[in-house]
Amino acid sequence: MNYIDLGQADDLENKKDRTLYRFFEILPGFLSCATLILAVVFSFIKPVWVAIFIILFDLYWTLKVAYLAFNQVTSFRKMQRTIKTNWRAELDTLGADWQGVYHLVFLPFVKEGWDIVSESLEALKNADYPTNQFIVILAPEGRVSEHAHNIAKLAQEHYGSTFGHFLVSIHPSDLPNEIIGKGSNVAYASLKAKELLKEKNIPLNKVIISSFDIDTKIFPQYFLCVTYHYLTEHDPHRTSFQPIPVYHNNIWEASAFTRVVATSNSFWQMMQQERPEQLVTYSSHSMPAIAFFDVGYPKNIVADDSRIFWKLFFQYNGNYRVTPLYYPLSMDVVTADSFWRTISNQYKQQRRWAWGCIEIPYIMFNFWKNKKISWRQKIFSSIVALEGFWAWACASVLILILGWLPVFLGGEGFNVTILSHNLPRLTSAIMIFAMMGMMVSAFLGILFLPPRPKNIGRFKIFFFVAQWVFLPVTLLIFGSFPALDAQIRLMLGKYLGFWATPKIRKH
Image (cartoon, rainbow, N blue to C red; front, top):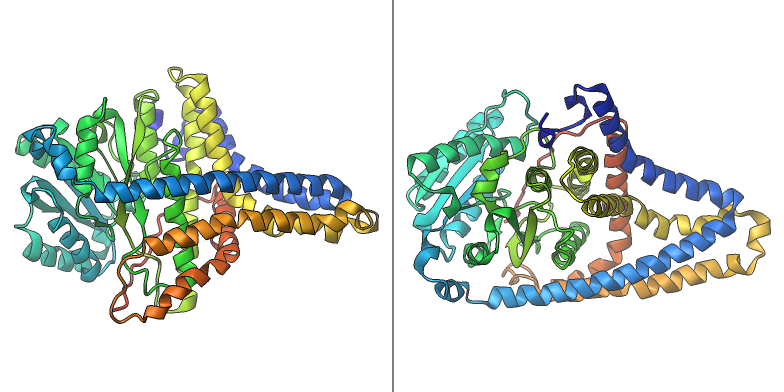
């Protein structure tokens, strides 16, 4: 059986394999829940143990924050240099062959309006790259058929003759073995793309594929930058290319809570750029067409952006990686027509991202089955995945809430000890030092803001600094809680479907 196409445990017919896969599905939720439950239980029976654990964990997290903050600054400086680089001049040093490289761009969407779709297409139109070398496939969902046809008609009228090739691929709603979402949409659109490439006799080794969210607005030199890295890679057909997502499209009109969440996500991706051995494709990214069509885009999974990387990783027995680009793409901050709707949408988006925990059983099961990947690689990648999702679910709760439990639950015997007296002081001091990571984020966030719209007052910039006081709240409500939600659902076999974040612009 080809295990790289697995979606969940029920896809396996063999009982032993299905049981093993379910064990791996249960594992992340079990570890997170066990950590939090034991922290509470031991605060009653062994408060000294918990207090020491909390202090050591806070120290560990402070060192990690310092390390990540250093990576964040380093990545930010590299991004600034990358934006300023003249990538056309860099490509010209390689010869004229670069102008023969095609860029095939998938733009799937559901209910987004023409304002969202047209801005993304306009950004492609204005890209510093020969437009005749673009193959743009607009891919609406057929389940919103009237809306899909209306947007497709407008796009055809305004941009049909702008690019070398422009196709509309309406994804049918009744295809078997699919999960409705971006992945199945792109998978269906790729069939039309492959037909077009064959019809026009365009060789796959001359094609780079970009799978973009519909709100993705590229910076002008993005495709020049990708092309340069593709042509200078030692093995260009064994690597994907990951830009840095920044959420600038509507950042001036978004709420403080969602700005903090979006900016934190951007900075996390910046940090990940500095750890390429852990880097996995995320959201909008690019990859070689040869690899893309070799395995096929995942259509039976919600976390398609990371799954396409892992499919290729196992297809090539570990000989596949992600190249960090240090070049940004801009997307939307979550907004809605009311405050509480905004909060709800942000939580659902974070839960969908946290549903990436489904990669843990997938990679651990495939590691078990694949005998050609080294045990060192298997152990390293498994630990990275488990630790990442465990920390996502538990770290903020341990630091902000459970660290105080020994004082409240430890009883009189513990409360008369010096450790009990000093525990709040120690944890507070450690966390104040750890706040330097927040200050770094606030400073870099201001440096990289897009130009202020004319209808926005100049004093709003102060709110972009003050908003970081909400970070502890956002770490819990939009960090730990949706991560725990997703892991518990996976543990119980309550699989999530795809939830498309509504895109609303306030003009």
